[in-house]
Length: 379
Image (tube, rainbow, N blue to C red; front, top):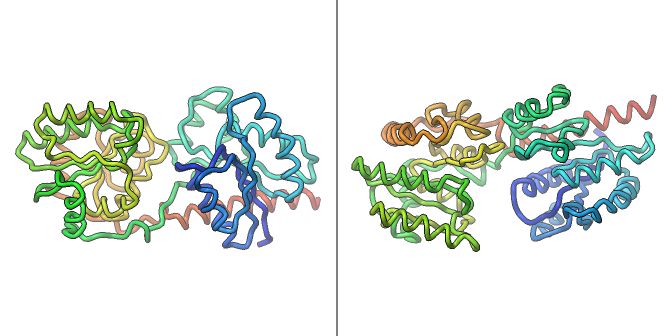
């Protein structure tokens, strides 16, 4: 396969799933002998990107201002200078600017244009640009259905589902129960000590992540005589202090504050999964994929979550017992108690949701498009 030059476009390199996927594909490109270029405003992940061997060009193409449109000329020049075969846009404003730049280039030197729908963006003309790629990568079938529902004129044939993937070595299978991991968790957070089941709800400190539903679940379990504990890693964030006070007050009123740990993000989330008996995914807003579901399954822990969005899709396909009708707290309580009493066996394999599978499928898509372009030029 010939050497490709792929330019990825995104607003910045701070944190998040879009940024993570950008680095993962840049790394795969370089390891395969290709040239990887990323255009963004930069950020704390820029050193990690450069460490893969990829190049970074600093342009603030994600700032929502009319002045940002001036970068279309700079992008057009960049695409021509590096001989871009593929331009891959991962966010809406960078996609608009990148599309204008690509379309203004002479046909023989024009790179192929790819987009990825990482989220369930609000439908409308602004978001429609993510359907303008010659190939549109959808991170789940949920995203594919969403696009076809809201943009019915989109050609279904150009939509390609490539699920996000994890590196299994970063989420190794753990024995259940894992006494060492539970002791580690209890040493850091005394509320997690005890012999009762430990539930983990990972996620940022936003109301959309379902913290209140998890608290209600904890209270109901304890009312039924289950000595459950609840850990919310990632919820305690700067700027969310008032929300934390609300959650802690609810726990105190429910008389289970001593069984609750609300903590900052941890770099040892795999160990947190290993310490748990069950992982919760209760996001109130349907998610495009549901990465925490795959992470927990990789460690060998069951997941219970709302049956909507990407989370519902993953549960339906991999562990149907954990799928609960959205916001039905009664069924949630019964399901959690049943799964705790009779845990499903760990999944034998999740080959479709590995980082390698995601990288290989994306690079194959690049090659197919680039080969089409070469044939068109030669003819």
